[in-house]
Amino acid sequence: MNQQWARGDAGGDDTPGDVTFAAVIDLPHGLHARPAAAFTTALGPFDVVGRARNASTHSPWADARSVTGLAGLGLGPGDEIEVALSGPDADAARAALEALIADHFGEAVTPPDAEAGDSGLPIVGPVHRLVPPDLSRYVPGEDEESRLSAAVDVVGAFWTAHARGPFDAIVRAQQALLLDRHFLAPAYNAVAAGASAPAGVALAVGQNALRFERLPAYLRARAEDVRGLGRLLVLALLEEPLRPALPTTPYVLVGAELDIATALGLDADLCGGVITWMGSNQGHGALMCGELGIPIRTRQIAARDLAEGELVELAADATL
Image (cartoon, rainbow, N blue to C red; front, top):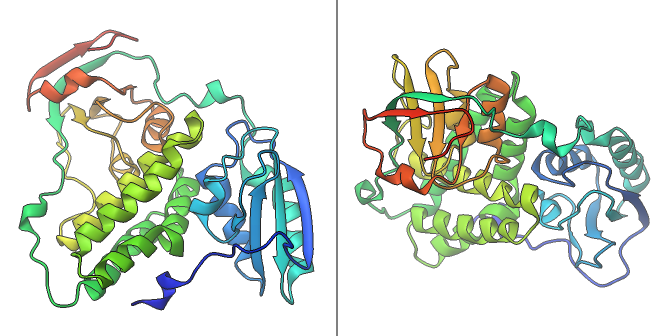
């Protein structure tokens, strides 16, 4: 078993640590994936054990170095986060975290409506369908743990290669999620028990997505990030490209959800819009479309029946 992923969380009794402090979350969407990643990054250099909880809801303590743990606390706007730190660098870590919180976690404090992913523009063009990974091609081997670790490295290298640019904060959050020991622990545990690497990934994705799906709307949309990261890991296990090849002529992209890796490859001059039958306009893929000026319609069940090459013509704000 890979011990990097086998360690437990920082939970414990109600006597939290050497240094404690509390602060109010003033972000319009609460403590979601990006600020949670910034929090874990700020804590990274310090020799401390950190825990955090939602003091407003009296939640259980979570590992303060875990993106899934922090984002899963359901800290909404106005909620109070309580942080407990133990170790030689506890005071320095507190100062760094308090400075981060005072700077709004590096986030722009804007009203929620300002980040809507759907631009309200018409969607016109021939359909290009996103094809899910074909798991029937995967042949389990004798060392599934090593194959899973290699896939993690491939996906990590992909995010590192895209860590600079207009969406660097979103990419960094994906990097932090991938490196979160709690995120992949179910996968490594399943593989150690004899499961294939893709089956382990599916288990980890299912468990982590469920945690987010129980939270309020914007935090709930982070389940899309989890599923997108799982798709990348499966593609890496299949030794396939992590980003789909997109047409070089105008098209409308159609699929279950728009993940971040696919959104990174969209060209506003060619992509006439995106239509999905899952997801939401608060998912990171949809928000990226908004930044690019690409219209997107989510939760369009009829999109399942759109054929490759079929012409789509949707007026502004219209649905299928």
